[in-house]
Image 1 (cartoon, rainbow, N blue to C red):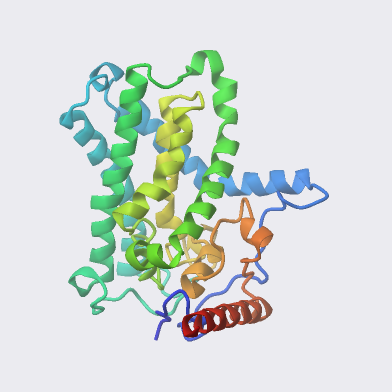
Image 2 (image 1 turned 90 degrees about the vertical axis):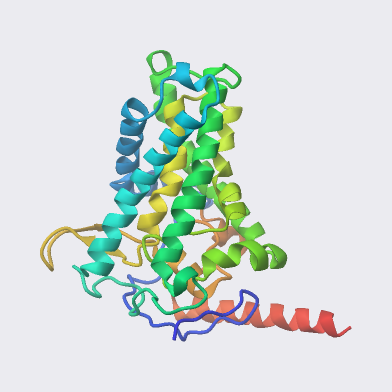
Length: 341
């Protein structure tokens, strides 16, 4: 049976383990001292290829063909906001839906590269309609795409009225292109600290628990969150309310932090691109899978390894798991002692 413990308990090894990548898993050397600039550059490039290019392309299509004209967005109107919402739903469904059909309905890879040997639940009363996929789809498409759309629409309205700084591609293409790397690093740094807040006892019990019902994740699990968590998680884009950018950058920031969760939570380390034993591409994120399995580790992401800096890194090895269990036991004992005083 999968591990469904509360976050303050002691983690166990009772989940249905499946595929594990080569261990220990590695993280970016960006915080290493002395610095390793070449290693950091290689890590950033690997982070952006090939998935990052997919988000760049989807964002370009969204901006150039499926975003209302700025003249229309100078006045708030439910009609153009609805257009953006339907576009965001379509993009998210295209990625998450395709992955779900191929990996979980048709099971084209069967269990190959799958982190958890169990399939998604259809009889768990913790989920709406007792069905994990339907529950996850509801929270992704209604709340997730809804909050994403509200943030994006407000920002486009601000741009259309000249209320926040904007630069054009023709005059600042090099500056805007160079924003890709710091944008990614900002997003993962923001995620780490927001995630630590979400694991505070009261916030977890009332908000973040909804996401963590997905111990065994699938493509629809990544953006399946409480509306308050959606507001916190997607707030990284507020950077562009003060830093000069272009509406395309806003679309890219929100899309890459929304749609990308379908891949990172897919539950499969790699996606097969053809026949078995043929070429594959990077799929899920084992670093974050360990967080869903054990709760109190790997709060951030690999590009900015703040978990390593703050002592919450789990590299997948038995030694790392033993250290985490000891920390959890000590923390649990301190809390019991405080409660008994």
